[in-house]
Length: 394
Image (tube, rainbow, N blue to C red):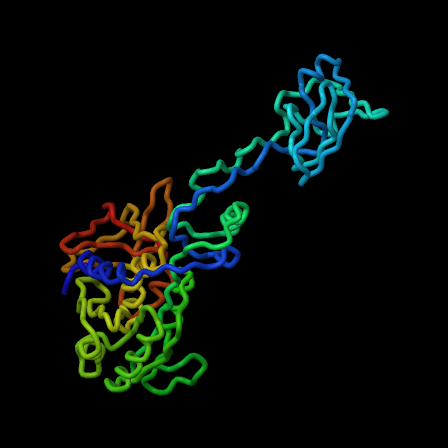
C-alpha cells in the first residue's frame, strides 16, 4: 500500500498529461472553465456617456447664467459624439455620448423646461450622472484569468469586448462501470442475494456536482473476459473510467488483472480506511480508477483520491481538498492507516464541533447520507474528546 499523499502525487502525474484545451463559442461557454488570460481590447464605456435621461451642461456656464440655459441640441444613445455650444444645454438620453466640453448631466426630474429654456432649481454637483470612459473596464487590463468558471456575467463581459471565441479546458467524459454478480438495476425486482446498484447513481450525481459529463457503462458480471472486453472498448470512448467492485484480491476480483493485461498499473492499494483496495491504472492514455464495491468506500475514495484529480483535469482550480478544524465530541483509538470517519459538524458559539455517525461500517450508506463531513484521522494519531480534528464538508 502507498500513502494517500503518494497516491495523489502519482495520479497527478498521469492526469496532468491528459489535460486538453479546445476553442468554443463564447455564447455557448456557460459553466466551462477558461484556459487563457484575456485582456480588454477596448474601454467600457468607450467614451463618457450619460447615466440618466436629462440635460448635459458645463457647470461653470450654468452658474454664470444664473442656472438658466437654452436647450439647443438632442443626443440619443448610439449617435456620434457632438459639441456643446457655449452657455447652452443639450437634451441627452441614457447612454448618449457626453458632448464636449460638458461636464455634468442633470437628471430630468430636477429640471424645468419652458420655451426650450432649461431652469435648474439648484446647482448640481460637478460630474453628476456621467459614466466615464473606461469606468467599467480599461483597455489592456486583465478581465479574466485561466481557470475562471465562465458564468452569465463573465460571458456578458467577454461579448461586450467583441470576443466571440474562447479557449477552455476540454470537459472530460467519465465512464462509470459497476461490477458484481449481485447487482440489480433500479426498477427491477430484487432476487435472493442481490442488491441495488447504488454506486453508479451516486457517482453520476458527484459528476454533476463537478459539471463533468458521465456515461453509464452498465454492470459487468464477475467475469474476467467480459470485463476485459468492456474496458478495452470503453477506453477508446471516454477520458476517464471509474469502476466499482472487483478491486480486491478475491477469486472474483478481476480488475487488477485486466489493468495489467491492457495497460499499466500506477498503484494498487492505498493506506486509507475505508477503501484500501482502490487502484489506479492507465490504459491507452485513459486513467482507470478501480474503487471498492462497498458504497461508503466508493464515496470516500472518490472524494479524497478521485475528485481533486478530475477537477484538475477539467481545469477547475477552485475545487480544493480543504480541511477545517473542529472540536471532537468523541474519541477514537490510534489508527494504523489514514481514516475518514463520517460525522456531523455544526457551529457552536462560533466554533465548529463534530460528532461521529454511530455506525462507521463501509457498507452503511446512511452514514454518508446523514452526515455532512469527513473526519480525517491520520495514521498513528489518537482522537480524544475535546481535541481538534480535521473535517471536510461535502
